[in-house]
Amino acid sequence: MTTTLITGGTVVSATGRAAADVLIGGERIVALLEPGSELLGTDVAASADRVIDATGKYVIPGGIDAHTHMQLPFGGTEASDTFETGTRAAAHGGTTSIIDFAVQRYGERVQDGLAAWHEKAAGNCAIDYGFHQIVGGVDDDALAAMRALPDEGISSFKLFMAYPGVFYSDDAQVLKAMQVSRDTGMLTMMHAENGPAIDVLAEQLVAAGKTDPYFHGIARAWEMEEEATHRAIMLAKLTGAPLYVVHVSAKQAVEQLAWARDKGQNVFGETCPQYLYLSLEDQLAASSDQWGAFEGAKWVCSTPLRSREEGHQQAMWQALRTNDLQMVSTDHCPFCMKDQKELGLGDFRKIPNGIGGVEHRMDLMYQGVVTGEITLERWVELTSTTPARMFGLYGRKGVIQPGADADVVVYDPNGRTSIGYGEGRTHHMNMDHSAWEGFEIDGHVDTVLSRGKVVVDGGEYLGAKGDGRFLKRGLSQYLS
Ligand code: URP
Ligand code: ZN
Ligand code: ZN
Image (cartoon, rainbow, N blue to C red):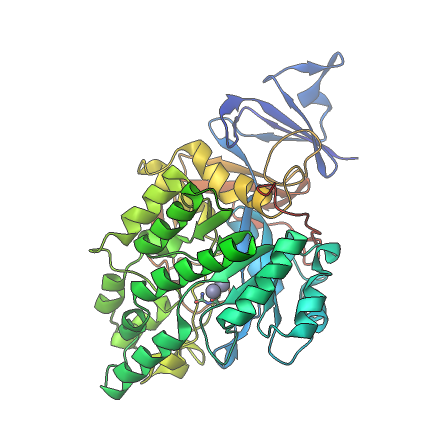
């Protein structure tokens, strides 16, 4: 069994920080030791097979991105990262586990959708991976099949109040699925936007000649997110289902979540880096020689970017501090401009929705530590510990403690990360642009270990396709 000692660093958890050495044996954490200490009379550093010097650096549990879409068929095309390219990019950015969404569409069997996702991922991933189940066609067969998902290690499913004709569920379908959630303890994950109303607004905008990407965000008004969030909360209350609202971007939606939580309801929410840093105004201002105003397509996602002037971004940061929002995921759903986003030239409704960011979440959230929006401990909690607890992985993942998987990141607060695609910069996602072009982070992912194996060191990828294993998840730790 290979032993590794990470020495000289500051180990950061969700609850504190301390100078400690981390001893790893094989795939697991063995011990946290006083720096330079002996173990059973032997000098640990001298006897370890490998020593990683983390002097002046943070040692944190590997990131868990609980919302990704590798190879998602969507918008007439397919998300451009495969499980191979997307998980490798994630590893570069200090994320050591993802939870992706297996898809069942209307008319398909849930079991077949899940099997298809296993087939896409197995043997291809650089890091460990689990699945949520998208249920895009709630009918009697699907409802019956959903009850068996926890035995498969799938303890959460996603419904859509948006995208009529694609993944949309009406209120009756939502209600029935939530009854399964109540009975099984599975978490209902909700895309909360009023899809039918949005589609009317979008159609009217296009008819009026307002076809640029910016109008995607106008059609998907915050009122549509607030209304759907409230409706989801009330249906969850009625049925007794635990609810987790994904990609929250409107401050009014957060107010709904806070209201329900104050009343004692099991309601949770995530936001994504794009809603903390990017805005509708940025999208309106975007223009390039190549694309003109269509440049804004790079930031077409749903829920959409919100107006900075209206204060949504500040509300998201605040909610992350007050725990009205508990997690940050990426909603990684990459599409290239060429052949993919450009499907929506002349009609924003045809732009495939999604932003790629699985590689940058840990850095972008660390920048929030630098600017004082969140603490170091909260950074770890939002990006690793809470995702593990929320989605039934805690103990194995999300914490550096004896017995846990040795998913560890050595993060250099004195390093620097330049994010982008052009001018010599690069990222590892399979995209022909970066939605994060020009972002500069005052920190750097130095070394990444996945179950004890160094998979990234100084920017070099040392892992292999197939290193990642499927994670059978338990029920959420947040539910009594
Ligand atoms: O724009 C997005 N979010 N694309 C991925 C699908 C979804 O709704 O999560
Ligand atoms: Zn969604
Ligand atoms: Zn998503």
